[in-house]
Image (cartoon, rainbow, N blue to C red; front, side, top):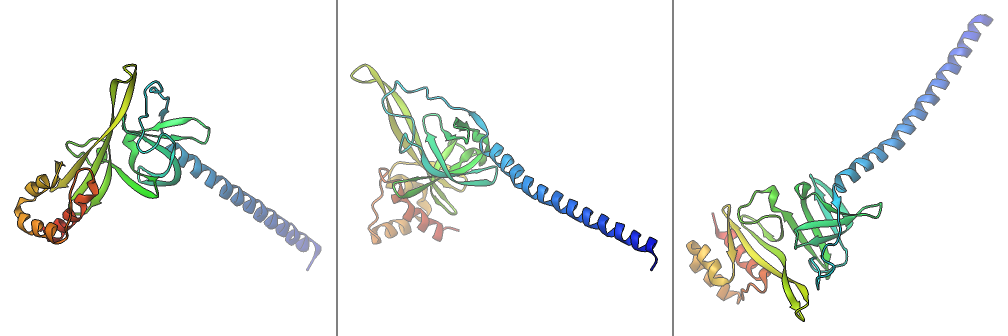
Length: 237
C-alpha cells in the first residue's frame, strides 16, 4: 500500500474518532440538560399561583384545617402528582398554600388542582376539587370519605365570629357539612333518618342491616355513614 493511501486512511480515522467524541459529549450535555428542563417545567406547574399573605393575624385562632403549621401532603395538578410536600388548607378561603423553593409562600391556582392529601394525627385525609366535576351545591375542596357508585363527602368551613373574645377580638370557628352524592344528585345529611329517606326504595333492607350490625349513625361522626352507604351500593342496581 503506497504512502498516499496510508495517509488518507490515517486522516479518516482521526476524523471519525473526533466526530464520535464530539457527538458523545453533545449527547451527555443533552442528557444533563433534559432533567433540569423537566424539573423547571414541573416546578412551573406546581408553583402556579399568587403570593400568600396572612390577612387574619389579628383574629383569634386561625383559618386552617387541623393545624396552623404546614402539614405533609401531596398534590395532583393537571394530572401530575407531587408527593412529600409541605402544604396547608385554608378552609376560610378554600385555598391551598405551599412554600416554594425560593422561600416564598403561594396560594395555588384552584382551577389547576385536581386533588390533594393531608397527613394529620397518623391519618391521611383525601380531598378532591369538585370544580373539576361541576357538582351542584358543592363548590371547591371536599374530604372524600367514601367513593363507589355513590360518594360521601365532608365540606369543612371556617367563619368569623365578631368580637367573640372579651368583646374585643374576632374569633375563627369551624363548621362542616356532610354530603351524599347519589345518581348525580347531592344530598346534605344530618342524621340516620335523613339517609333512610334518601334511600327509601331499600329502606327495609337498610334498616335490617343497621340493626343487625348495631351501627350508630351521627353527623358528629361523618364516617359512621360509610358502612350503610357501602351496603346500599352493594345492593343497588
